[in-house]
Image (tube, rainbow, N blue to C red; front, side):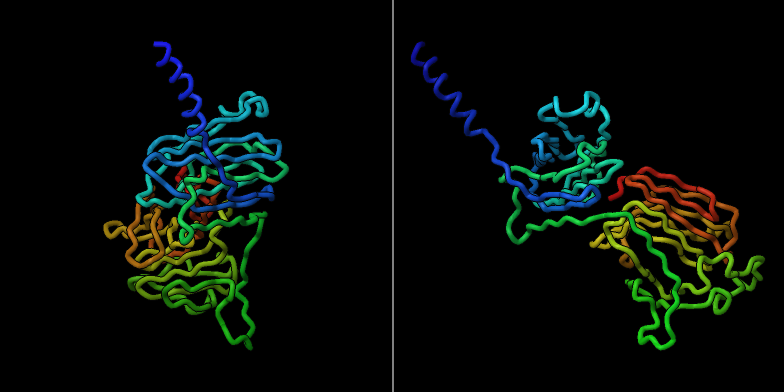
Length: 334
């Protein structure tokens, strides 16, 4: 019995040493407002990620598919007493690949952690100053050909366009807009837009006062999308006057590099001939599947001009029609 006990005493420390995790620092985030993204290896057991401050305080996230993150603060004495209670956590997605994207959005009002473009944690700003290091176990490094990472500053911005193009310009289409698909061109809001729908005279004609700008964009074709801005924009207001004549028209927003997006659009109910507004998640590609998140039927007739607006704040979106909020959704938005 003594020999067995002696062997146990010898082996246990060896097991503890072999189980010690080896970490690798992937990125340093220096700016107070920034988006940091990286690819990591992913297994059925998930992944562990740490955010480390200059004082060596760390926030550890143990990310397991289908479960809310397990959060650990080390050492706890370097954090406020109620800090862990203020975390908002969502179940971690279950990617079908062995490589997944992990992102941290650092901002003064809150930090957010994403797995595969899905927010899984929102928490108060732990450190206002200094560099934050993102690290994970060495075994979670993806293959070299799948390894990618970047840090993008996300300072406050303002984007607007008057659609004024010089008559001598070679390209008569605004350079700040990207034609993804469809035929797009500039038009005068009081000029080329049709004033009748199904042989019915409109009671309200488009006027410069109703449009944000005298000149605007007009698109046509079976499927048309025009884009502006950057994929890392996530907290903004986007508005445009839209005349709905047929099909589906409206705004797409939160468009990612892969073409995934959200949309706030209008279509006509064939029974009532009134507008129906929808908030959905899908893609900008033709025939991309859509998941409808919310629907509102209205008394607005087709053919009228409607000022459509979306307001995005982290994981929340609000949709307005003619300055009236008609939809509000807390969604898993990246």
